[in-house]
Length: 120
Image (cartoon, rainbow, N blue to C red; front, top):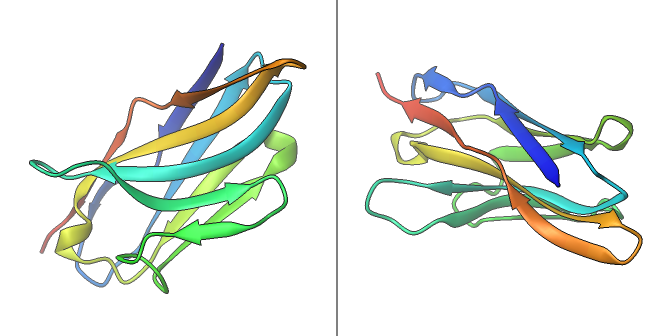
């Protein structure tokens, strides 16, 4: 089993910044990718950003140019730097990972989510 613990959510003003962290722990043999998704009330969960083991990144159209994903591979931790926040960024942000828990078994795991609210 792999556990993901998110932190860093909270309240920010429009135009402000927040940084989210996601630490993976447990039976980790090798992490394939880590990423962030978000879900606003009444909406489907959507991609925010992902980063694979090779360092390639992908971003949702709504956040390109404003958000940056980074990873500390030694610490199995991913970060999401969110700048120029907008009220429409308000959502629960979920950390996700695809990882091998043993040499022959991989799966996907989700964190419990952290609330981000952008409001004046």
